[in-house]
Length: 104
Image 1 (tube, one colour):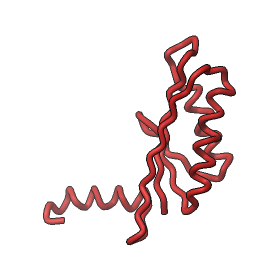
Image 2 (cartoon, one colour):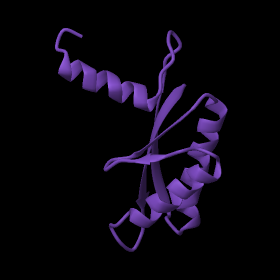
Image 3 (tube, helix red, strand yellow):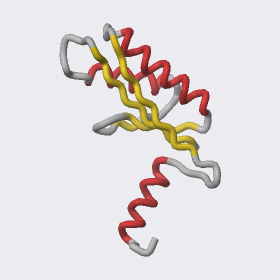
Image 4 (tube, helix red, strand yellow):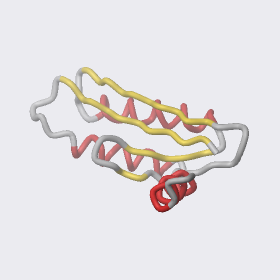
């Protein structure tokens, strides 16, 4: 499983608020069949298909321009591990169990 985090920064808008751009970006991810999880600093999602992740990047990036931004900075981080199966939930469980058992 590939875990991705995407962050958008619209520039050249009438307001410093980005919530409507983020909401549209999350909609675009859902349209692609992804299950995005919104965080305070970005949106995470997972897929087994790198092509779908890159398609999601393009859809999110273009959605900000479609809403009238004149400049967009979009950051995509990809975490792909091939030596074992992983997921967002599995990574969270590992962190929690590490806290509970400091010998991990």
